[in-house]
Image (cartoon, helix red, strand yellow):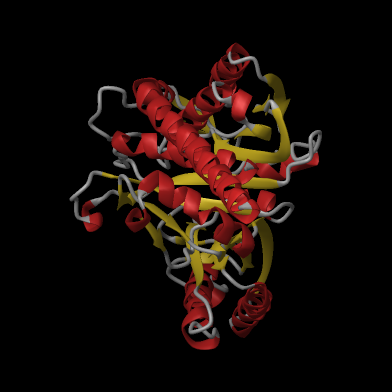
Length: 430
């Protein structure tokens, strides 16, 4: 009889625990449904009023005002324009960080929507259009809605949630610091110390309602390089009287591509070297003295990254030397490899499956795109996943890529982002 009572008590405890868990899951679903129109409205407002990195003044003001209206502790000006909101649950538990990036890109928008951006600004001395062409507007709206839902559940919340709204994910203006690295330097992961961190990113070629993820190395490290080639100027009709740095530049570009195609073990991990800017010459009959190349390197393995850097230095200097020119290369490390802690992924994957349905949470291949969320993930266990932003049934090949003037995301997937964040927080604390 005693044993039966113990078993009955244990069963009752389990049933109560399940009921409690299902109760807050149902509450999250209902709250996410209710706030969906506001999530979309926020996103459209931010989309129509985009701001470049380190200049997200209007966005930050709206975010901070909303967080204060929820009764959160708010810190502004973290990493220049960043905002941090702190929600203390009623029960003891871990400190969980949630991050959204706020900045837009220097692109003139072509998207045929009524809330398209017409904003103009200056970027590195050039007049540019400004557009949310990567989904950061949605990230901000989703995290604001997540804060609303969790603030309404704080009596059941175990621990503390730190909402991190980050500037300059795409990189700060030339000569400035910014982004995740600067926020970390200014203590965003401390006081209280963050135990784990979650982040999401819209994916324009993944159907709304689906989530993609990968444990371990998910996104590539991003390095930017500059190559300066010094030749000897001459008249365009007499190339033999000079050393043509344009021809040398062409040979260097070809040489850099053989590093990936012929010298890198691509069966181990992907790698990319792209020359994206060529600057040299002012007139059709003048061979210039100097040409400058700039571009990016993407790697998913740190040893491969070091090897490629060394091969690039050798290729650049030796090709220039063979032509009688000189060349120098500088490499600036912009982001790290975005690494999802495998233990954290395994522990929290059921929360994403609960939010989206198990069949809608899918393993993905590693990407050569990069994210400065990687700086956070280098400091604390982190999990960064992708949220579908393509109209269901659409061919992914017809979806306009991120960082383009026609970039578009379907708004029906925003609600899943709120549910995913809320379930991650509530489940991790329990």
